[in-house]
Image 1 (tube, rainbow, N blue to C red):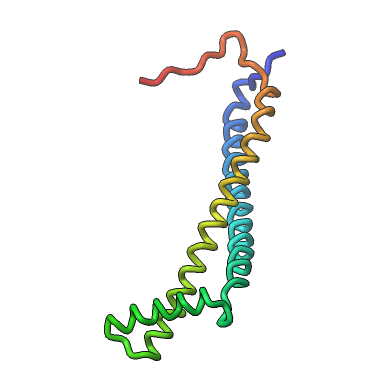
Image 2 (image 1 turned 30 degrees about the vertical axis):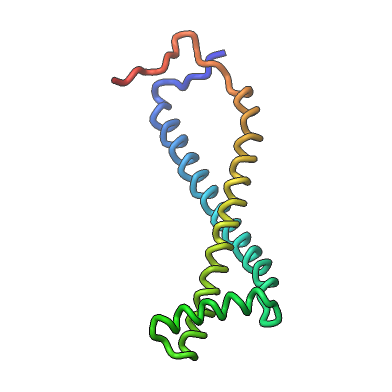
Length: 134
């Protein structure tokens, strides 16, 4: 069985291959970006469930951050606002790290699941050899 294209169809085949490659890459990036945003929102919501003014660890962290900002010259109200902003940034950072870890795991699983598809690829023709670039 000869799987090669006739000479007159090679340019059309090349164009179709490039189109599907670009389209597949764009769709893949869109899917991963959507998953990343969803996972980041999920992780942020989960992390925020632990932050409460009634949680002694949260209060302790806010007081420590506010003290650090006051020692650098901020007044008490400004230091408290800076501590809240800093805590929000920490939550956002942790949510981003967790969501990237989720996406990395997802891509790894998809990669491993797609490995058996390599067995479906046909072998090259008898004269088909990979070009050697130097």
